Length: 457
Image (cartoon, rainbow, N blue to C red; front, top):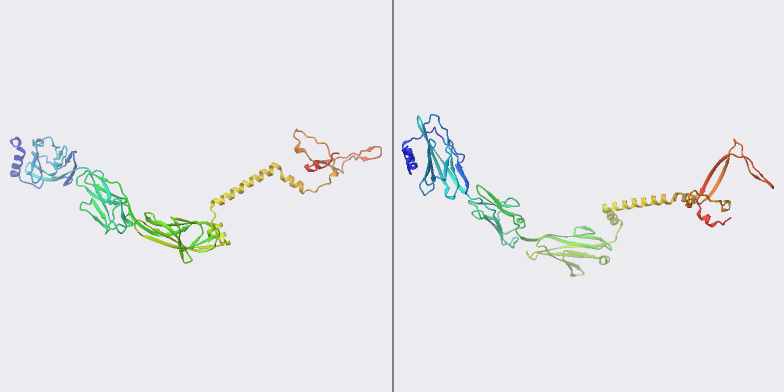
């Protein structure tokens, strides 16, 4: 075991084995990937696997690190599970037998390079194989910062916009640009820097408005920036005039006599337009109002004239303007107009009408029952007898409030032919009474006005 002793035993053993041991294709080393990415300050394992024959009498493993232009450095040597690390790296690298995996305890940027492992197995024949793994060390990216130039924006078809993105931390950072959360579409007006951290829009358009962000990433992490919306000045486009009343056909507004109408002038523009309302008539032009709204008062409409108006919009930043002409015709309110206005009643008006009808019906029923109007009407319609035929009789009431008992009482006797009866006949000296047997009906009629008018007997 002299081969494994001494400070330079790893290098001497590697040279002697390379010279003395031949190779055999029966031994195969496997690794999950030819390149492994690690994080600075974190441990990293380089997994190497191979098959061991039970008849093998010796297994030797050697790990080397190549960092050009420096010569290869021997990290450690293992022989039959006995480790001999290089004194320079004895606290940094360890192994996990029976496989040949190498553990790097804590990664530093200086640990980047090509790691080579050589495995020698001695048995009836000696087999040897090597495997190389590239190790890269990364720093996670921080959230990138994005800004646009110029910050105040650009004018459509005139100015340019440049977007810049930068992550303060991270190694081997890649940048990707997003618009409204999706990868930036290709365009002939876009140009990018070599590392893709900057892109420029030459001659901005209205369609370039959106939410822009950038995605910074490397092999171990990614972060997206906050989105920004660049300012692009454009317009005016699509100028039009609308009104809250009247009928519009093309550029002609037909308005009923006496209506007060408000006109609105709008267009797609950034910043908003300044609007001027102009009236043309009798070979003259007059500015009658400024602003996006114009109200034609009923006093003016009642003149029954046909007027021509202009709405002129102007963008102070782009220096562009647009105007549209419309005509106002005053007509009397005919039956067709009235039908159209009736058909356009809102559902709220219909609901209000039904509600009022129900309330009035309930009030009428209440009054009808409270004051017994049906009895009063029936009495009014019944033929009247002369007041002299009635004889005032005392009124008897079974309760203190006898107001409801006022009236004229009539007793009608209906004789019964099958039974004897008495009849009272007047004579000079006495009354002759004849028996009767009949049914008495009480008829009550409320005639407070007669009671008040008839004199006391």
